[in-house]
Length: 56
Image (cartoon, rainbow, N blue to C red; front, top):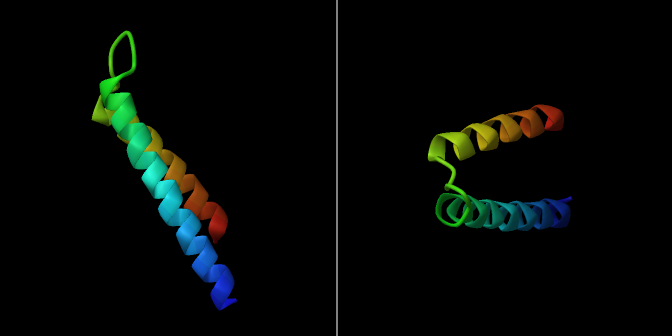
């Protein structure tokens, strides 16, 4: 159990790092115009909310 929780935490940290990279990419390099923080944030909040509800 402890080992599985540790692995899950590491996976979560890796996912959070990827999300930060994707958000930065979306803000800088997407054409024809970059996404706004509002656009990106609204998707992230809804997605995270749904995944957290599924865990309980």
